[in-house]
Length: 197
Image (tube, rainbow, N blue to C red):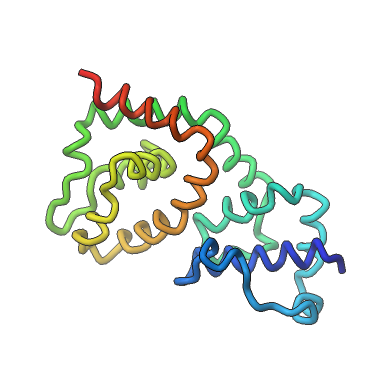
């Protein structure tokens, strides 16, 4: 057992808790109660030890997040390098993807897409659910032109929506942190695409 393996286990627990409960990873700085003894007794301890050799320390947060976004209760043994690589690819050329998504949004009419109708999920989120635009793009769009809180307050659809809204809110701070260096560029892209006549 290594200290690094134990620290990866703590990060795993904190992120799992963040995505599956009211716990806030950022508010509590990723701290959770879990003893070294409890770690050593786990039947998946080897997986955490192996992870330290495969995933560099600076990238472990992204590795775990890439799995917990879609499965808040993901087990360490079901996590794969493939899913992590797909997640990294999303961010590699994000400004280009963001522009493409916004051009698609503009064609559909941005105000129509964020309009709340009774017993309906707003169209912009339906586009995410059907993989026509990325969740990351909508999170950044909401950062620039806030609309999600209104949707959370007004949409009353009992199925699919609550789970999606929770995923959106839980994933949002990770997206903003990941893209913080390019946020000014993304704001310019949004203005250029959506506000230009």
